[in-house]
Length: 185
Image 1 (cartoon, rainbow, N blue to C red):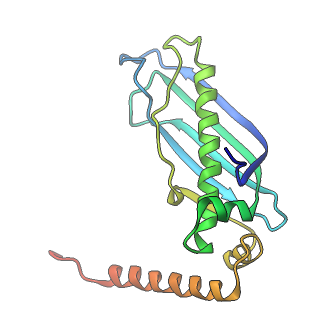
Image 2: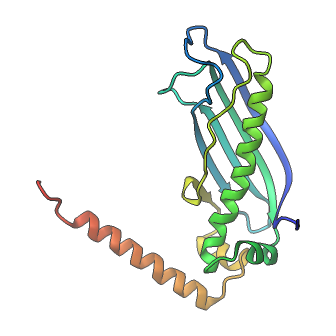
C-alpha cells in the first residue's frame, strides 16, 4: 500500500435530506437509481474544491426521495499523481484527479444515505453502483486552462503547444461532423 496522490483537507455535507414515498410499491431491497452531478474547481493557490450532488432519479421508482450535496477541499501531490496515474500527457491529469476525488465524495454520500435510511420504513437505501468517468466531471477555474495546466500540473511550453494543437484538431473534427449533411435529410 502506498500513499494516495490525493489528500482531502475536509469533507462536508451542506445539504442532505430524504423522505419516504408512501406510494412506493416496489421491492425495497433493490438498488436505487440516482442522478449524479460532479464538478471540481481548481485554484492556483492549491485550495481545490470538489462538489457532488446525488438525488433520486425522478424517472425511476424509488422508496425514497433524497438529495445530498457533498463538497471537499483537496490537494494533490503532482509527483505521486504522475507516478500512480501514469498519464500519456499532462493534459489528462486534471480530469483524472477530478474524477477520483468525486468518486470518493460519491462513495461518502452513498454511505451517508444508507446510514440515514437505516431505520426508515423501506430499510437502508442502497444506490446503484456507478462508474464516474472523467467526462462526467465538470472542471472549472477562475484561471485559464493553460494556466492551470502550467502552474498546477507542471506543463512545459512544448506540452502546452501539443495540447493546444490537439484541442484545435478535435474542434475542427466536431465542426466538420456537425457541418456534414446527414443521410435522409
